[in-house]
Length: 188
Image 1 (spheres, one colour):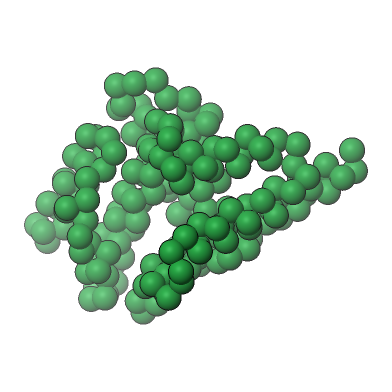
Image 2 (image 1 turned 120 degrees about the vertical axis):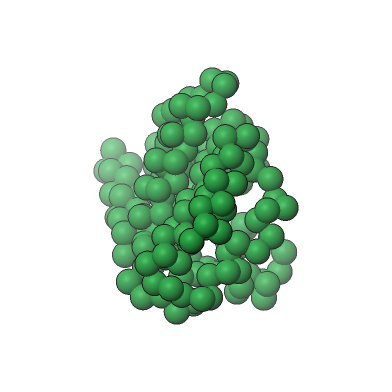
């Protein structure tokens, strides 16, 4: 049992690191005192929960919230790599590194297989919960971009909006929220 307890403690300590791991994309664009990965994960979980209430199909809320809280756990090892930096990586390298990091963090955890499988559903969009968290992840980023634009007057955040209008969300409610957020942004 000691092995499992040690593995669980390691998992909890790694997850705790997300509280002090800043979202790298904000700092690269000149923002200071930015949200942590844990802050972002809370936002994703809350948005996913709200979206699930409005969806016209069954959603396993425990699985949904687990995926939302788990989706960036590999960043406890890799940190949050800003999107512009990814163009210097070979295709698939980030995903492979994230899977290796997740496997390391979950080593010896009795329910590791289920968590890895659910994380994979998020990555592959193979379940309603995984797709809903994908939408929530993107919506949370755009909501935070909107908030930072309003509170900091930073002019380097436009790139977060570029190409978003031509990229539909998985679910109509997510799309409607995005369109209203975009309209709100243009009203100011």
